[in-house]
Length: 356
Image (cartoon, rainbow, N blue to C red; front, top):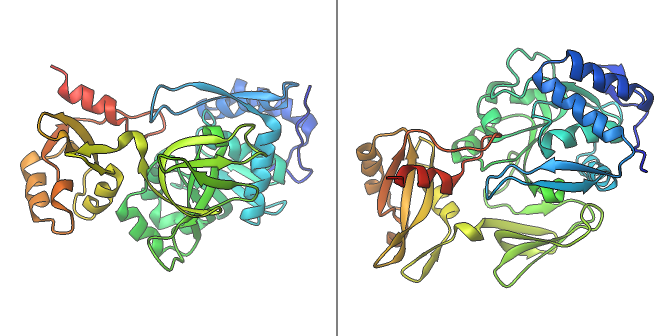
């Protein structure tokens, strides 16, 4: 049996909510709320039951979606670490515009309850600030939401962005916005982010991620990130993310180990190539390795709903990319395969294109 803690300052839309109120609030949202509010209500009911754990779905962007079990005490510890890092104090306002079906949305609710925030929720649309005319101390978004909210982004005084790669164009735009925005690194297994780096007020575009309190990092023999965070995970988390280790508290993300392309014996990170191409290619795209008799694997550019000949003209003019990194072929998908929360599923998209 486990009883979660609810801060005396916790409120929803300005209305003070105690632990005793949560059952009524949860069931009211399930019964009378909009679809996204029903998911919030379901999470609240799960959160306040006697179980010490809660089941959470992964997004499935890098594999088959699965359900994992997290300890509520570790989710509370994660919330405390975020509150400490971002100096969130009781009574601070927070905006929930992510679905409560995944860990990022669930953790916004946990942070509010644990830290005593005043949380406001809006539908988790691609343009969540539409119609919003007040500011919030804290919020979380995925890059698509950021891209559609740039003119209003300063309403969120502190913003964390995660869930998918952030494009070069968004990075450029966000630099000039007068708030404090941060890119996050994390996953369901680490109860959202364990590391952050600023997106504005930066001295260099190549700044490393800095880990949150009580997190220590290292790398394995594949150069992949290893996370030791006993307050939020019982076991050491070994990732498939290739990194440059700056210190036990800082790292630079290079790409996914399972995305690495071995082309003629040279190991290439698609994410690095994508970073260069994103300066020139303005449609959704990704780089992937495809089997090749001569090279083993060849670099292929996959674009969404674009002219192959026009993209080829752009590629031919790019100078700041090495010869063996240049795409050997361009494939066009009418529409990318994506997860529920918008992450591109590379392998599934490629399978769809190559399907006879």
